[in-house]
Image (cartoon, helix red, strand yellow):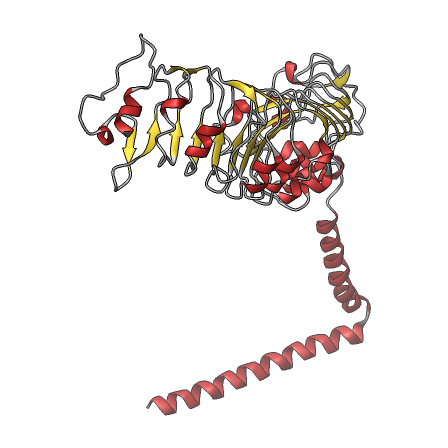
Length: 422
């Protein structure tokens, strides 16, 4: 029965033929079976599958892994399918032409307990996944809903084992602070870019977990190596929370195209692993923190199109980026911008650097103190002997007696040593 179901799958006429010639379907390309001979693994990404294939899969009731991503599937998902495939652990239907309401009704005994990875990104789904599913998806660790439309259910916060949550480019909107991500203690990747979220980032969302990271679609391949935050192109506002400095493992920070205001927090310099910092197109003001110069691993940097002013910290890696990284803030000056700063000491210059420069022009105090002490001690003794005759006689008599005593002591000791040796 499993073999017949697989042979019924509709492939696009121009797709490369699969090696499905043997009698045993367990040996076919992209197919694997359990020890009893039931098909439990199907991996057919980018194989030219078209139309509605799901009726042909309903009989494969032992499936635990199903990857049909990057094909031409164009049907809807049926309740009957998920009632049958109640042992699925991984379901990847991403990058197809699937459509329908995300609130499709899963059966009470289907998928919920077993599913760990659910990826239906880059399709044409809409609506909201039912709360009843999310409340029972205890083992769900990865959920990817990106590139669809719909709304974000509050019950998503019940999936406490989530490790990766991808919500990129879904036209989601609303106050992001209503989402209590502190419940998701295992979360390491959260992708919310290309939406229309408003309000500021809650400091509490960053408070409990120093490894908590956000991501954006274009960085997903990097996140396993370089954890990142990207909330690019939303409507987030308020100040960038200083708690951001607690995320010590952060490698990417992209808050561009938002409405953040206030100063750039100096705590960003605590992110010593940071390789990309993008604050482009916000409403940030004030001076560039000199402490950002300590970010030695920065390979990509932009604070353009803000309201910043003052000099760009000199003699640092920040000056190695082109003018485009700073354009749009008329108050900025210094290399690499063509606008020169005045010769007065800039208030943005590090105080320690200023003190060092001042100290270079001071006469060293320690050698002078040593020299004065030597002169005082020398003339304090020699001057007294020159001016006072009695002291001078007593001093030289003391030296003669000391010399005689040393001579006698050494002579006696030498004689005793010779007697012992002989």
